[in-house]
Length: 189
Image 1 (cartoon, one colour):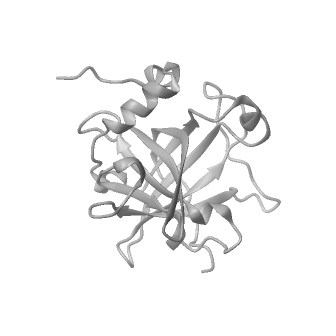
Image 2: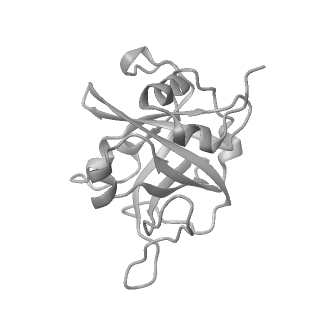
């Protein structure tokens, strides 16, 4: 039996080691994601990116009772560091700043870059993001870090433009943070 990989193990890994964990990732029991939220940390972007954009974020999963679709969105967080208290950024109305809506979809039979063949991916192109929003290009594979557990998930940033894939050397880690607190409407609804 393989040694369980912990959060701090992942954060200390080199980019090559993170990519290897991803390649060896495990299928997710997507029903275990229903109505949950995760704290996310980018593992690959350079320090200047983290300074001007983000390093940490929240990623959510909501099973829509009307459609049965598992969908989600990202939430901007105050950038206080991974170890500090992570609070959602809010607009003037006091609402969480959500962006990058997606649906969790089966990857079986789909083509992905670098020969990846896994079970699930996040499809940002079908979730109602605005046409000019670059997050709508996301076509991001998602795996479980440890077999049989959805406590730690690892995603790979891939963009799809038509039939062309643009795989980035960017991975992000998700740590389960409990039940979903706020349900965001689907964009355009």
